[in-house]
Length: 124
Image (cartoon, rainbow, N blue to C red):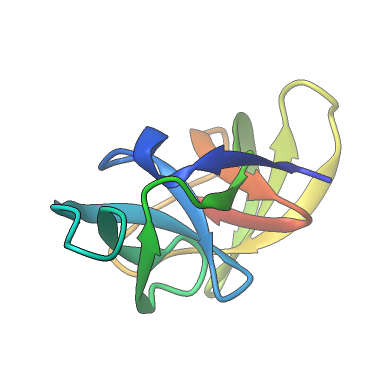
């Protein structure tokens, strides 16, 4: 398992959290004061790392949530065909194919950085 549990109060903007079983990067984090009959609540807004969908989460600050452990790795472009690039991991020398994000211009021999979580990969 590439995830761990943390309390909501330990999260901060820029970190990752699991929302709807998908890893998300936190864009906004706000807390509301405790009321007469309850504990303080946190509202978290995030964007999916691999699907770019916006999601939100509202939890008590002492609740536990899953935090994905997303690895940042280095790779080298081996070849480019249409919208796909064949990438070689610089640590394990494993090769795989990834979709090139819009606006990116890759050519063979370029070194890139990518994120990996449970078999999902994305060029940064």
